[in-house]
Length: 102
Image 1: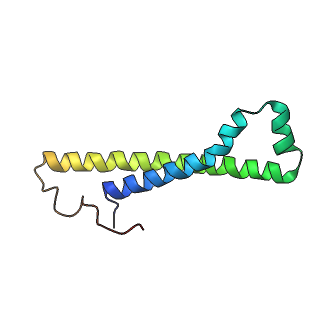
Image 2 (image 1 turned 30 degrees about the horizontal axis):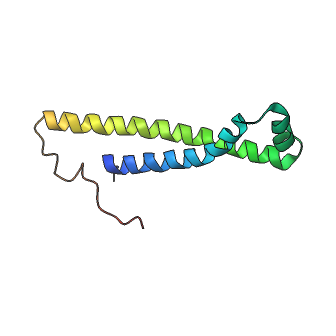
């Protein structure tokens, strides 16, 4: 079943929250000087691995987020075209089904 606009927005919010969480490390790095950075992330292999994992997650989430934004745009255009064509927008294809998230 195709995603509704609400479902896509839910996915986008989730990706944004994950991205925000992973970027906390990058914000901490911004406040460091180069010597602090070298000591934490380059002196031992574990620090370098943690930095690499964080960078990969942020990049992957950014790609996922961009893709979701494109899907949201397409879904909005579908809704606009259907509305202009006089179609019933409450026919079920554009409605987000209720589900529990708790």
